[in-house]
Amino acid sequence: MTVQIRRSTGEIIWERDESGGLACRAYVEDGTQARIIGALRGALEQAEFEFSASSDVADRVLDVGSTSS
View 1 (cartoon, one colour):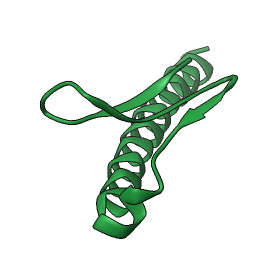
View 2: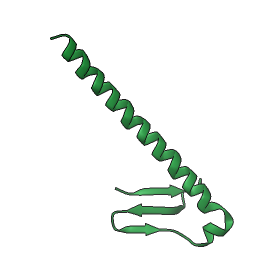
View 3: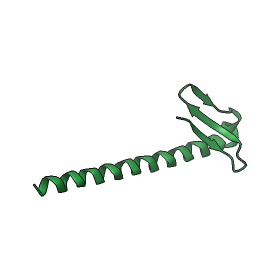
View 4: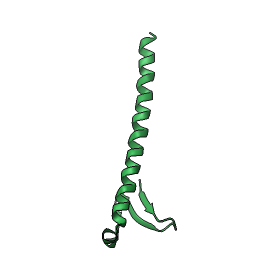
């Protein structure tokens, strides 16, 4: 699995996969790194929400099945 952050122009400015990553130290100085971290946090929050929502649905299905028997 690969995670990439791109500028609106399509240029990859941050990337991480199983073998390593791509980054630029200059991004720390100009504030880009903080925006990258914010984008990753937002993506993680969304993924965690989607995961918990799907777990809640599975739990409800199990609950319905157990109360109807």
